[in-house]
Image (cartoon, rainbow, N blue to C red):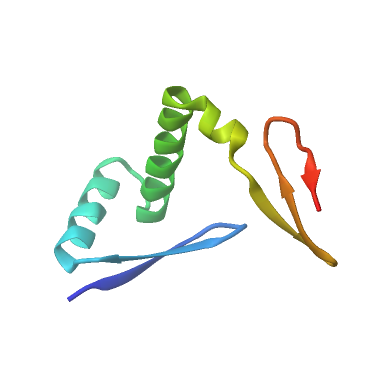
Length: 85
């Protein structure tokens, strides 16, 4: 059986399924570090992204990020912020 954990930030929510034992162990680690579970998960996500940017920076400069606008989707590339309509 899985439990759902919701990580809430000001900008977005991330829902993940965890087995109860994993959730309990995550809580132990978070408490040991003086953090909340969502703070610990957030720090792990940020660290993973930073590590990947160091390993493969081109992945982040060529990846297109969709941004919704009123009349369609505009794709922004992080490297030059150019738009494709």
